[in-house]
Image (cartoon, rainbow, N blue to C red; front, side, top):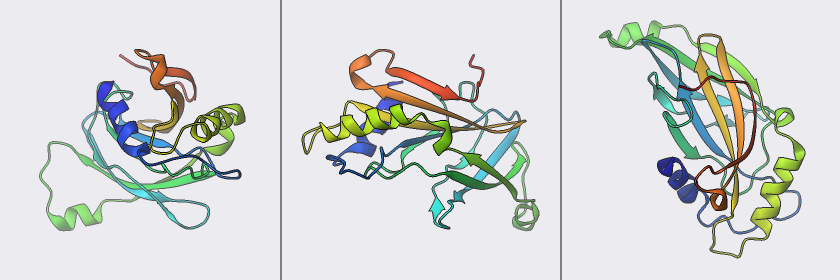
Length: 181
């Protein structure tokens, strides 16, 4: 858990305050629960046509909340995207592949709706925390977006976190129900 909160601190350094009309910013967390499969995600597309960051290769993790990869995607206070359309390939984890075989693997595409699934009062709370934070300091609250690859598709889960709420950190969460060990 400390490792993931360190990622937020690094991702939000220098964020300062958020002007009216801007968004909450977000920290992204990617994980896979697909047994024996490596998910090689190239990222995704946003409604604007711009690219959305991807995690690269993900192997199966025991716990999607603490395993996987984390990055500060928009610590500058950008709006939440309406959706992200991810692109990835899957390959067997313990198999050696020739380059031609990897290139020939099918590309999977799935659109994940985001903005309408995160409550507006959560977004407002993160933005208020950012506005009230003095320049050069870290905001108390942050929004985490979790994308978890499963056999049933990509699951989406969001978390409102506060460093003042340690050791639990999570104040509220929602989205798809994803089992934890």
